Image (cartoon, rainbow, N blue to C red; front, side, top):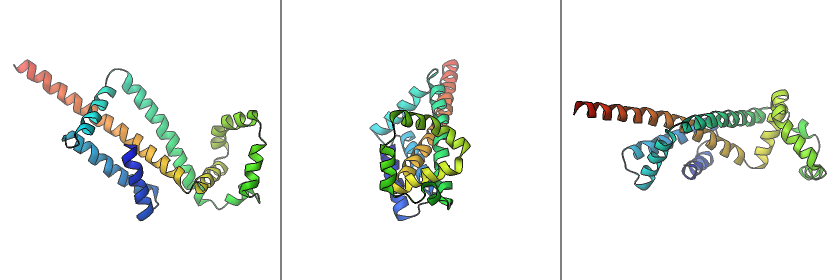
Length: 189
């Protein structure tokens, strides 16, 4: 699905609007179209593969692992999208780096020891809690340096996981109805 949704989002952002909320709607429409076409068996091998995978996710305790992972990733990706959007709206971006150029900032990071990197990785989640505006500006500036690609991937990932949860719920209800109908047909015969 990422092979379908990422180009759709990139085309939408390039030619229509760079609003993440608008691209959320476009990606939702494309995903729903794929699910409906798969349900009507109009996608051939891909449709059968999608339905078989959804059926496999519904078995046993695997569904709880998928829902737990989805909830965790939705919260992380949603936080990152919010942080980038919030960081872009703040006007204090230059105060974070000060008067340092990009080259000076890169030279500073080359002087860091492995312990500094490990400490930074461990402390980054705490920084989002204790210093959210500054961390938002930092992640927004990284997104700007990457020409918005970070926001593209976060948005597509967020929408894909959100729709995965919706699709799983839809197929859970659909498979439950099929099993009820099959049980009723067996008792009626």
